[in-house]
Picture 1 (cartoon, one colour):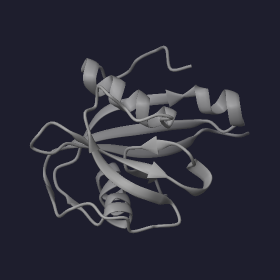
Picture 2 (cartoon, rainbow, N blue to C red; picture 1 turned 90 degrees about the horizontal axis):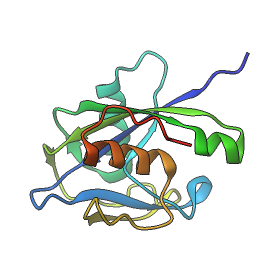
Picture 3 (cartoon, one colour; picture 1 turned 60 degrees about the vertical axis):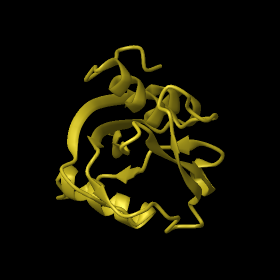
Picture 4 (spheres, helix red, strand yellow; picture 1 turned 135 degrees about the horizontal axis):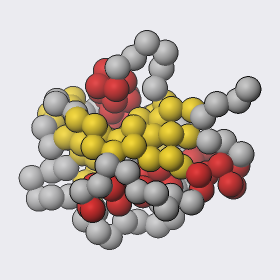
Length: 142
């Protein structure tokens, strides 16, 4: 029996209220997205997202907290791949974002979360929607 994959993503907010978004390349091209990846076997959400953020951006994040769960059915309808995403938030980080994986990401930018660059990866858009609405789960993620 096939089961959904588990993704993790994080909204990193700077002092100006902007969030970090990357212009993706490779398998997620041409989409924009918050930092994240897949949860590995045996990882906590916190350890997994700290590792992903460091690998992708070079940032050290502190005190990530779970803010939302999303059921990314738009992806499933288009690709047959079903992801459930654990979405986190922090405004506590060290460093300046840089492209650590140039084969996967073109650039990192700080943006107003109400004005997302398009096209935007559905899991990231759902996470940001939950964040802006202060909702843990939104049912219309199709």
